[in-house]
View 1 (cartoon, rainbow, N blue to C red):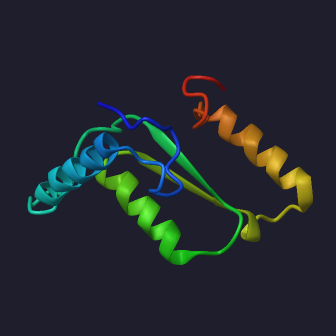
View 2 (view 1 turned 120 degrees about the vertical axis):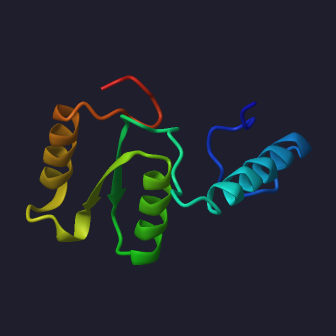
View 3 (view 1 turned 90 degrees about the horizontal axis):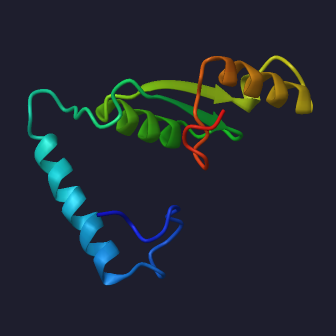
Length: 111
């Protein structure tokens, strides 16, 4: 079963089924956290690239920990620490990530 929406920006538009799915999934992960090895193979062999345009250590750590617990490989790009300026740094970063074979979140499988 999947959520009815691809993006979760709040809960006011969630259906009863969506909420039940979220709570059920949370319970499954609660069980995973009781294991000696706190990982599941859901994203094995997948590389996730996080693009951060503002500093947020807690957000970056939260995303990275969740991704690693799902067995993903993780790359973090921070716009504030990139050595080039303006649009050039985003263009170059995008080209570099594409050369790694990264997948776009809105269009899986499309480079």
